[in-house]
Amino acid sequence: MMRRPRSWTQWVRRICQGALLALFILAVWSLRTSSPEGGHRALLHLFMALDPLIAAGTWLSSGEVQHGLGLAIIMVVATIVLGRFFCGWMCPFGTLHAMVSALRRKPERGAPLERRTKWHAAKYVLLLALLVMALFGVNWFGVFDPLSLLCRSITAAALPAAQYAVDDFSTGIYHQDPHAGPVHLATITEPVYRFLRDNVFVHGRQVFQGGGVIGVLFLGALLLNFVKPRFWCRYVCPLGGLLGLLARRPLYRLRNDESKCNNCARCNPACPAAAQPDLRGEWLPTECYVCHNCTAACNFGAVAFQFRPPFKRMEAGGLDLSRRTALAAGVGGMAGLLLFRLSPQTQAKAVAPSLIRPPGARPERQFLQRCIQCGACMRACPTNGLQPTAFEAGLEGLWTPKLVPQLGYCEYTCNHCGEACPTGAIEGLPIEQKQQVKIGLASFDASRCIPYAYGRECAVCEEHCPIPTKAIYFVDVEVRLRDGVVKTLKQPHVDPDKCIGCGTCEWACVFKDQAAIRITCANESRNPENQPILSGGMDAGSPYGI
Image (cartoon, rainbow, N blue to C red; front, side, top):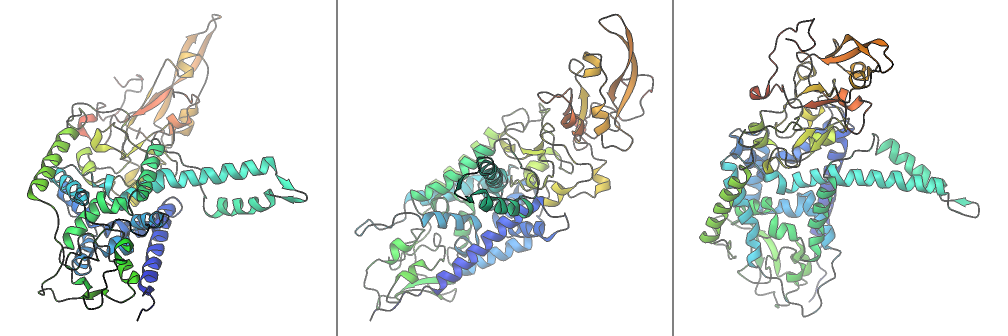
């Protein structure tokens, strides 16, 4: 006798997925709206601490135990017991993939059944290659880790695009004022816009260099679900690969009851992972998301999950990863390591002047070993000055944060970036200590600075300098103008003992194409090899301190 599909577990799972996705988006969104002591940053840190891939990557590359490692260990133990339930029930990026996969056309009757292919091993190959790189100090897990990738994509692409769309659409409606008779569309859109402006997009619009590339990659990962359901989770995700290795012999196992099964194979197309629930004795626990779609699709109760004793023999398929493939992954990791270390920056042969790290950033090698490219610090920056790098730090430093003073300065009374960092790549310094950290040094371009090049007064940079005793000071100089008149001008100079490289002067400079005062990473506190200015008092009679 047929019975209704058992779908209550699906609804519980969907509620969990939706709630955790909403919480993750809230955690990222609130990085810019809450105080450093607020619970939203702790919420994002909780998500990241639960990720064993982040914990393993930072530990292997830096040799230091990540704060909150206990939560990652709890996730490891839970995976050994329950299987890859994180992928099916908790992962917010996996939830987005499941939502997009649901938009696919249902497979037609008679379509080939889903089976494991050699491409399922790709995520294990990527995982092993990244692990080899981490062993030698290169932490690139953040580029592929689903939580880091999602946080970066929401920060650099999704939220800015959403705010831009809301602002411009509402403005366009307001100015065009389309209406049908007495009904004006603006009377509907304006209250919605004001609510979003006052409650959601509270601060000014953020823009990010390379945000379009990050957004395209994010959309590309989602659109791959139209090729195969949960394509990223099946073939790419290194966290899924790590959890799959841990879930080789879970205690929570799928059982296909031969006495009830009529071999209809309805459970097969319902499985988003191609875990082969229809093949008795060949179910793949390393691929299964424990989503219970297969149990809901079975009308006879033949397919069910049960807890089984750990010593009881498990009838299931094994991990399809040969020694040759594992060796090739290790060789690939070594090749990637060598490729990353070919740049002059990674070999300390050169310093990119525009690579201005946020205050509290560890020395460059330690910083790269801990940074997971999540973009949380960039989202938290109130001035939008922190931007993702391209190749200033070599390929190894892709999408790590740098300060771009032309877009925003480092707020003197702010330490949000250190508070937001989930791995300690940027240390959360107290305000008083943070204000003493030098991240760069200002220098004037005399060919553009107005008092130098054009014989006119300008004091914008000095007025905006946030240092209480001012890092920019003036020297009175007599200059002869074109008409022969001698005029006394105040020409600005930089005191290197007081300048912390915050970039406020460059941001405020009246030249918007290329500022007449610019910040480089010279004199940064974290790098003794990049401190050309010796500390000590300056000769008041010499603008150059000599």
